[in-house]
Length: 116
Length: 110
Image (cartoon, rainbow over all chains, first blue to last red; front, top):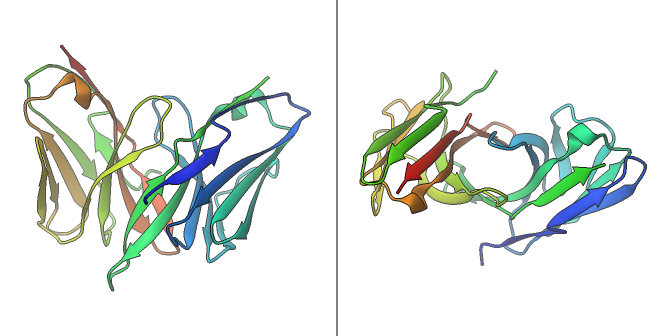
């Protein structure tokens, strides 16, 4: 099972709404990621969780708030977003291979977010 | 500044042609991955290259890791419309940072 499940698949929200994106994996991966992707651009790293602790925040605005309740779940809480935050939000988890720490990341299908 | 630069950025070719996509960096990576992404979907892992000079083949796709582990290439033979998509290389930096290259958007015209 190499599945990363993201819900919802599509989300439309107003600028005053509060919503959450969810990500789940049962592969035992201990690194989980949130990315933001605009059309025809590569995914941009937002947050990294290692062993359920936030290890990297790529200067993301505070209107995005990540949470890792346990090793299988990753949430992204959204509040007071702007229209320019509309994008595909991708979750990924990573497996470490071998003593060199070589890695592969597996991605969910993403949540298509539209802020109106 | 992007750690991983891909070229070309856009590529439109006829079915049956061959093509090569490059992924270059000034940094050394312990491994590089290649992904393909279709519109509205998440990236799908194609291959991981680990050893400098390594070559891996996946049907009509050939992946190579540079000897110094700073660059990689993807060669597609006899491209088909189903190969259309965004091709992304990716590498890991210390602290579990997992970064993508700038991407190559490939269109194969029937």
